[in-house]
Image 1 (cartoon, chains in turn orange, red):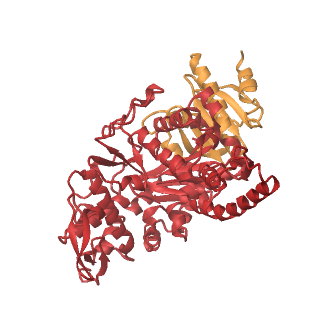
Image 2: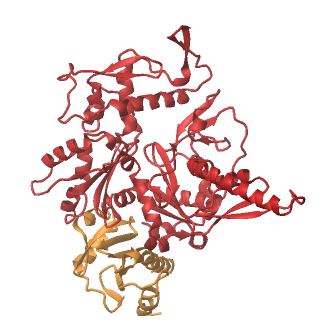
Image 3: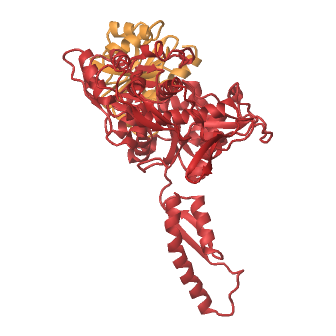
Length: 135
Length: 501
């Protein structure tokens, strides 16, 4: 399966409680885009470096919580995530979920407050599957 | 709902009188008692207590109470000092009882619970899993030999899942009298709750108690909803300590969570120490009886405390100390020093055994510990076991608040300073809000406008978390967010971390 199929069928799918993610992408740890949906913003190299250090000790997402999570031109407030595995951010009524696998970052953006739980489920389930596949 | 049943009774007598008249009048000689008349009372929520009342009132007539509206959620908030439980949509919790369980060392009844999964191996070192745990005021006042009392929450998460289940069962079975298999459960949890603890609770809820749906919401978020704010810095000054968390649009900013181990329980112990320093012993209510020696004159006689455990006596003495603290404790307007104010006018307090004590500077000195924790080393040394508080050191309220704000996102800080919400038991000290606002305004950066708000109503202050749960569980837009039993069976308890991070 190509990476684009992963994004189109497994991330941009219909969510359990209705609607769908606003945008999604799978990036490598170096910031290279493996696949993305149409409206996914451009992420700069520096933003990816910050993300990667937020997944690692000693600070994890402590500094990100103070400065903010930047994806493209948008700034997200960091809310509860899973240390070293998932970073969740929110902006207005939408938000972002970033799941780290062994060599990729799965990112999902949603725009409706009610989709937060579903977005987490969709992004993290794909991430778990990739981890299981060794990617 | 005792009052509800009380109202129903007179109306029911009228109904049954009319019914029996009509019944007997029609076929005079065929008053067969074996023939039963069925009446269905359509009620908003199913309640065994109501059914029992109806059955008693109607005697020969079989009554069933059926729910016509959608089943209400049940909101349970297990706090460190009291547990609150009630129906969603109401404005106060129906059941309120201490978060303390009692067990009898001589109690041989109660079988070992069947282990449903490996995760339930953990039980507290002091509460054996085969003992029958009792909860609720009536059970805790029942004194007999070997009856130990232990708080369920100690400076963090619960000591054993069986203790929490004992609290739940008391709330659902004895107080609310609901069959929890028919009601979704909204649980309020502390902001620092670990993932493992959450999973344990969910497992117990779905597997042992068979709830149809559940949700676990952070207490800071619920208290914020209760006060009508989506964004705030929630200061929960509770029993085991103070927890400060920033809430933004209904989400807790995890890194802004800070804690202090100074709370209501520490203050009660300080008050107890001050009273005992005057050579007055505080006797629990069961330790004495008043005998009339001559008409109108009563003498207090000690009843032996033989056989009663330390923990039991300590629990009841703490309740009296807490009452002293609550009725006469005040936060002074300016930083208080006991030595400067040694000649402050005293107030009287009458202990249960009739002793009247005079409280002077301690009135202000004890609540001052909240804001000047250094008193715990000087005046009240050795009172609070600060080493036992894991992860929470004794810190002043001001420091905890400022620490929390400095750890949050820079863009949100101004908004947080502007909307500091003070809730919890310790916020009931009337002057705490003013003092906090003044001192924070001095300590905060110049450009920040500091505003500390607290609900005007004392009930709302104490139960803000429960009220928020009641609000959330009854919102129409929330109903799609419950985690159902089916989802639990498909995905396991870990799904809750994604649905409600």
